[in-house]
Image 1: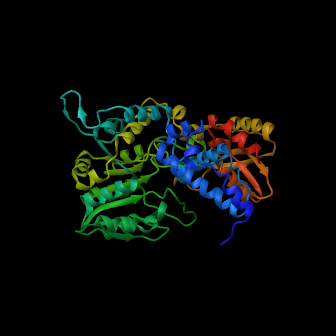
Image 2: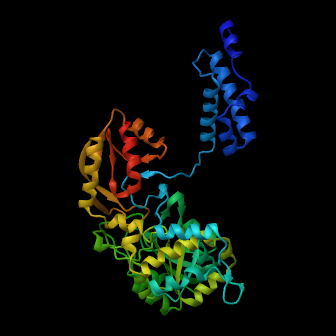
Length: 455
């Protein structure tokens, strides 16, 4: 332990007491924001750190204003939320690690309205009695997709567990080996099936599964045929997948149900925007699939949700299952989802839903933005590619323009950007930082430019 010198002892005596610091003019604002007990603890920690710095012969501001500022900085760090806004300059539109789909302004306002006021979550205004939360998005989902009924739960993995638990517990479910996918976070389809109590029957091979494979596997124990859309990977080459219509016909011929897990939740044809074909929910409904499950926060462009549409009798069974309550959606989800679905009902999704605004954004507009950045920061304008991301349209990209900045250490520079008041995430290519305007919001550009200038 370092011993104190006469000089350090003299300096330590100069440190003010906590009571003296509490009398300073600037302290009143901190007390109003954090409360007196928390501020006292922060001052105690600040003084302890100052004493240690003195003993270690490290420079330290020992003035009352300097110590109070140190305490304020400490409190800001302590109360910094872990869930924070960031600038996504990666060009990945549905970025799973960055919160996936952004909500439209109408969806944001709907959340605020419901969060700040009492609401009709489970209240029927006509009767004055208890209502059902299930009705809030059901009519819109049926109108858009053509399905008979709908149910919303908290995510698509939960939707799949509910479907299997309610319709196939202690029964078998036939699934192609090529569709035994692993979704984000290490969750695997076989594990989900095991948790639900359903028995998995694998058919076909990794790359080829024919209708005869399903036919041969059907027994008296079979409850469901299932298709899981490979939304987060792509097979190429010697590949064959059984058309959904053939699977539906086979299932119904044997009085079985066909479950279609679409994952990404596309309600708009993707090919018209230069993307690969992504199966839509409407197409599955038209193919007469009995149950269709998909996500709310991917290509649909809404909040995190697991959405189930299909035959009314089956949806009713899901609603009555005990698990449905455990995984039900909350008021904020319903508010955001209903507002998002209204954009589709009005045929205004491209104009108002951020995911589709970014997908539909022209390269000319992107180039104009990059040129404006370049004029303020410098760097180099290069051609590149944006990704849809979020387990949607794997391998499909959109042409874009990027601002490339040369830096001595890309990793250190990227870390610096992540520590900004409004953190920035970018791509690293060799010793370049790449910034894609496609995923940077207009209101974030000023902060982006200011932070990049510091590099």
